[in-house]
Image (cartoon, rainbow, N blue to C red; front, side, top):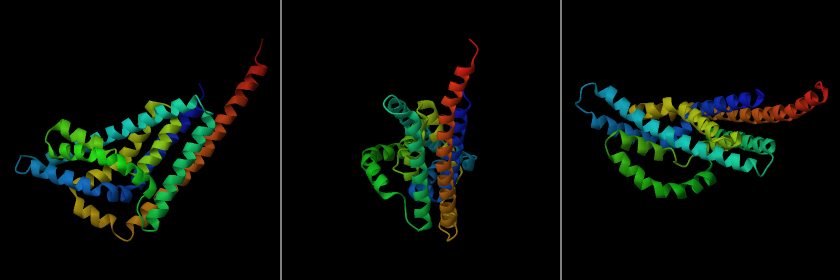
Length: 257
């Protein structure tokens, strides 16, 4: 087996993780209210208990573990869809197109942040129709207590319409395997964790930081850089994949009888 695809997968995982970190300002804008509500409930639930700060932290982390689980399910589904498409289309061209689309979407998100705008409206509006059916269940679970309720609420939270998540789904589909698709979305989710956990416990303080005049341009530039990197990686993937058949042919022609 060639090392080429493995290198491409590693690049995809690193790009997904970097996009999660770079998208902090966008993530806070999309999910900050929910994160703040989760953090407030966690603090209220443990008020007066011993080690209440640690207990609140654990409860908030449970929600985010559920959120990462939701991402993983979406990523696995996207990877499976890519695998199905493999049977109908040329994988090289399909994977290259999906990776290019991912890069373009991330660049678009960065440009919109730089312009002081929100996410990618048409994508997020389409997802909002699906979210309306899930929102009541998310609210019920978020209002409940217990580990299962926190994980379940977080899992549904992971399906909140978000242009960055949708761009990561295109990247996951390009892997054409459920396991790598799930890993891609998990890497993205891991990149969002520091800011999202902090926003649950330190919502007002973090809000002031992320709404400062400097925060959005920095996040926008970082997202544009991630998008450009993803586009360049797509060209690298195409080069690696096209080189492998010619190498195999050379080996076949010159192999001893």
